[in-house]
Length: 200
Figure 1 (cartoon, rainbow, N blue to C red):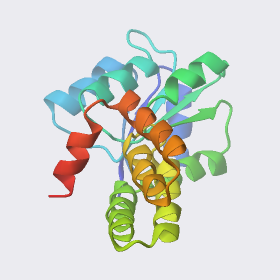
Figure 2 (cartoon, rainbow, N blue to C red):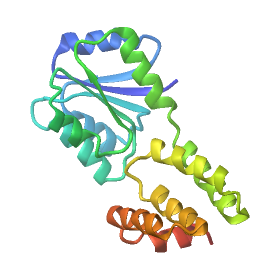
Figure 3 (spheres, rainbow, N blue to C red):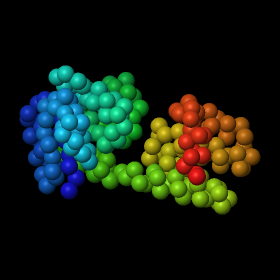
């Protein structure tokens, strides 16, 4: 059973989420600071974090930043009544982060929860391995389908751009290939070195 962390300073909101998540294992806290203590000091591994945006002390965005900076890739669902475009834009810079606007129904919450928990990192890794195999065997159409899937699974990853560069180079479209290479390098300047290491 997935272990979920709920963070909201309003007890009635926490109670509602707990009620909606009946059947799941969960911890329910009121601050980001308590949550970080559970994660880093008590070494609790969560399958999903559901957090409000505006909280006493650190905010939901600060939670996302701190976890991602420390390479914790747990899926995070931010629930908030604040839906300003700049806030959403900031959130979606990070991988495996989604947003649900308050108020929400049980069905809406459970749909997001299922989506985030079921979105396996393995899907990206599997697509990467298969795309490399198809690139090496020359089956470029199949490789292209997998690379496009990787873009949807991890939009901010440089790896799909690098694979698209390799694919377009094989097709002779050097101008577009170089655009993808530049995009990959803008996301990670060491992408070629890393990619070579993965292929060894």
